Length: 360
Ligand SMILES: *[C@@H]1O[C@H](CO)[C@@H](O)[C@H](O)[C@H]1NC(C)=O
Ligand SMILES: *[C@@H]1O[C@H](CO)[C@@H](O)[C@H](O)[C@H]1NC(C)=O
Ligand SMILES: *[C@@H]1O[C@H](CO)[C@@H](O)[C@H](O)[C@H]1NC(C)=O
Ligand SMILES: *[C@@H]1O[C@H](CO)[C@@H](O)[C@H](O)[C@H]1NC(C)=O
Image (cartoon, rainbow, N blue to C red):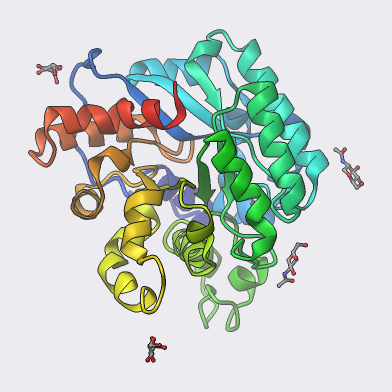
């Protein structure tokens, strides 16, 4: 059933990640289009960073490079087949670019050009990436991309590759800019430290005993099975503790992957973190956070998200091409038939919430 080669095995697992829904997709229902917003792309000029990243090699993700670069017929064919009318595209995590404003500017300009040159530019929008290690430059790049390219927000690595988060006051100019421009910031998982994955017996995610599949298991633990999501959720909790939402009550943050574990822990996190703070954690969760379904197509976490989150703040997304549009469509069909949402709520989740959030 499963391939023997660990990299191949990993690719198979990556493509079927968290897909517990096995219903087959019925006819597309054209009256309810899907808009998706964690959909990826990679700058052709910076492709060597993707190919050269040892964690992508461990993940087997390097094989996706040609698909990632394209904003044309094959992306559109998959969108058409799976009822996706609009994709908001963004660059996949690029830790090096977080420290280099010239790289983020290049990537953002190329994304705008790729959308403009595509056969159906109106079916795409852009989220920019920002040089998060240099807060003033990140704020300036956000403004430039919104004003010059008409991008509708930013999607950034949830932390820097040296482990730093964005909770200090140095980031206030960026949050102020996002509020002033009225655009959301998507906190996206990014790579763990390589040593945490490959240092057998020592690395945070590496097993203590080397085995045939230990490289694969460490990469999975550090990335899609746990690490990516736990770190991205932590990035958001730290913004709360840093008082960011007290200083910027209108700031809107998007968390993918069913909320990066935050909804599941909401009552406990609120209980412990809200002690002696002006703003309760739960209130920030209610007013400042949007959740997407990217990459997790299971009704179990969705049930938690629906119980913890205003349905006006839940949005369908796929995480293409790391997850399949087909699996997302099957999930949406299962959700619609599950009785967990009304038809109106389904439409909000399918496209209306994102339409309202970014003004499509
Ligand atoms: C398509 O949407 C309409 C309007 O909500 C609904 O009545 C119909 O049952 C849907 N069809 C399918 C196949 O889901
Ligand atoms: C970006 O700037 C760095 C440092 O100034 C330089 O070494 C690098 O070549 C530049 N890269 C590009 C693509 O412009
Ligand atoms: C990580 O890099 C940022 C930006 O250069 C720097 O401000 C921060 O102190 C660094 N953090 C650590 C833990 O080295
Ligand atoms: C919260 O504030 C009260 C009043 O200042 C203080 O008595 C209490 O110890 C504080 N709680 C914690 C966990 O610090």
